[in-house]
Length: 267
Image (cartoon, rainbow, N blue to C red; front, side):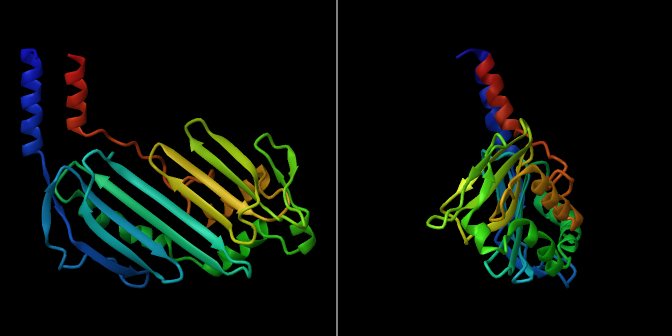
């Protein structure tokens, strides 16, 4: 091993010892939408780590969010990750969830800093009329006609019309659109989900995002319905852009240690 490799390896080891963060851990609590967001004073335990983590999950039917602080994974990428879902049962009743995960490595208790700055605003965004949300999405996704259920047509990925539902084997239309990089939409029929899943889901992992629908109204997985559903989600401030993204796009950062490893391999 050359002198430069030995020097960089020693530098890497030294940095791993000195750059550890202090992160709040063993902290889990609930927060409802009618109470100002506040991190409990009992969240006072910390642990050394190269990454701090924060997670929040909200469920409409419970009307509260569950939040936690912990340490992150050693090989994780810093950034914020979102997911949300609106799902309907056969009678039209709605369930809604929204989740956020945040990983950071720039300062001690950076996850606490993030939550303090952003959670009040995010939780306020979730205080909308869920009844009217359901009333606007339901007719876009669901058929009220038994005849249509038995004679369902869906678009395929080339936007050709394909038979999906049959009397003996009903189905459901679905479409998944990849956002940002290499944007494309996969469409088709699923005969395994009939009656169990009329939904809108969205995911955001920094440089990658997706927007998906499942529905049992003929040709409901086409571009017109996709945009109509996106417009509703944007109207209620669930998504941050009119094309269905949950954020403006957060670039993930590589850890400094990972960069040093790359340099060592190049020498």
